[in-house]
Length: 321
Ligand code: NAD
Image (tube, rainbow, N blue to C red; front, top):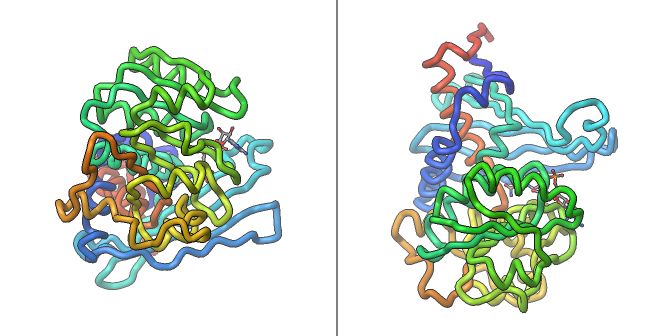
């Protein structure tokens, strides 16, 4: 069995390789050759922790396994990241545990890759401005991956605590782009692409603040009750997602579906656009929304790539198990 520790992951996989892995597994999901198993997520009644696992199987790549972990709010005080996860891969022919991979950086890369894939396929080709709502740990990964998809010229940022926006300013200056901290009205009025990546449980962005032609990638809502944009905005948009079952139950679409403003038939898998089975954006005026809920197969796809690279470079520890 191979072990790839968290500390090695950054030396092995690039954001571009994570992008390719996620793009490819979304395509497999839409072809029904890869599927996710039901997600388990529980408050364990200890250390205020939320623990769970996401799992699945890709019959094309034979990636089989799970990502297990969750959120431990007391970790910061211990000098640890609050979000903790590990990926376990199994041999699809024998069921033997094949590898364990540190899942923290992997999660950030696979989540950023998902919104970037949505921008590649659905945002307007001429998009020049990008707005990021949220300035936590994930936001920097989101912005870096998004900037590769279009010739962006300006970056806008909003966060409930504006002092955190220096993180996005830093990423923008790395890319040689001007950054402006703005109110939501300006962010909505001037951004061609908007990414939301917060832990909010109530809508931040209103339908009236978003102009025609915008592409939104809503990435923070991955649990029942969370919400980043008004349900009216979801109902106005052409909606794409990683997995429809998650989108309507734990994703941004949950609220519009519960209010009967949309039916789940209105939600299209991004993989169908990647495969050429759905045209994606239909006009320059359409508002498109990608509901990125985060699926286990994304984790397995990126972890499998990391293991391949680790074996090749000698970074994987091989133990008898
Ligand atoms: P973080 O704790 O580092 O940052 C949280 C961000 O949310 C900060 O910008 C914070 O200011 C903002 N925020 C918190 N409460 C808010 C509120 N009530 N209103 C507005 N903004 C608020 O977290 P992170 O690692 O950057 O992750 C951000 C979110 O993305 C989390 O909710 C996480 O669960 C989610 N996430 C989703 C996926 C996915 O695949 N969809 C993957 C990983 C993380």
